[in-house]
Length: 41
Image (cartoon, rainbow, N blue to C red; front, side):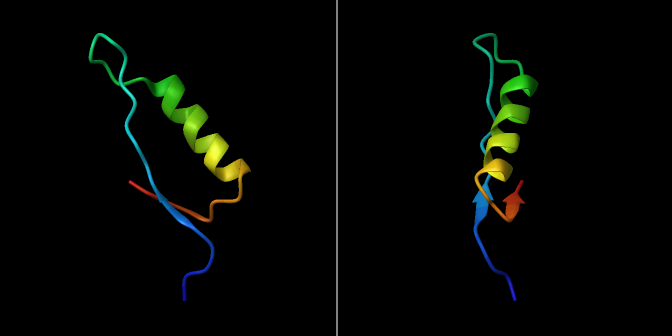
């Protein structure tokens, strides 16, 4: 049984259209720090 919250991840992009890895990592760390128990790719 799943418990807690599962969050769908967003994919951040730079203005140039490139994937923003730094922003993505920060978002994942924030989600985990706030108690999210699962991340949905």
